[in-house]
Image (cartoon, rainbow, N blue to C red; front, side):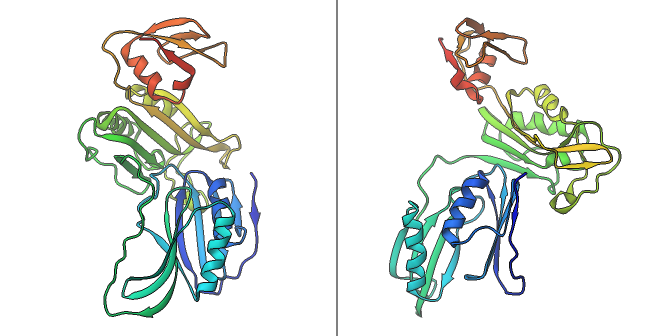
Length: 336
């Protein structure tokens, strides 16, 4: 694991924000440019910027999420326009677009500002105050580029597991289970949750699992350091895969199964898991002919079918739906 740690003063008062990011390397590059400094800490699974001017602690956690997360926007206030111009110039020279507004009235003040969106579409307002005014003005931050609205339900380690996901059948684009398998929940209860997630997802919808798994059964209750201290249970690495298959998910894909174990506790290796599965997409009612294009000589699926490169194989509508929805869709040609 690569890691850098630079000492930073801890006595000053700073604005602190923690963000989930889809690509940690890309986000570190963006914030290094925005803030004009390297991260104080940079690991494969965490980065922290500790900045004196402006006083800010920014923590980044790689995690699947919705673009922009739950935030409206976040911001930095600078003492004068010269400082504002310096930051904007640094971003523009790095090829990062900004949107400037001169002397706008908002939030009972007159401001000059610019807006910039980070790689995960979190909206930043960078501004300086000119004077207070006696009316609210107009404060409508420019929206990030329009994208189709996504219906997502997320469960985190600290949340209660619901008896039923509060969404209608076939209504969700994605279900995110963030640490759910590390909660003190029985495999039977998790199996019920996955079946309910399959119900709520639309055809072609995705389920994502993120958490810690072990190479063999963990003895007792784990006692782990740092953020992992909330982990109450560690499943064997094959458990999530088996439960997804039994719940009806296909196209299963390990986005990550840590090459390097995070911890060794009581002789058990713990690894980070990111696993994705798909609900079969909408397909023609009858069988479908598909051709595997490569790059391997042949591949197989959980249902026992073998796909040899350049050979036509007839599959059921359900299998065709899995193939169309999953990450290997570009490796197949669908002939009917």
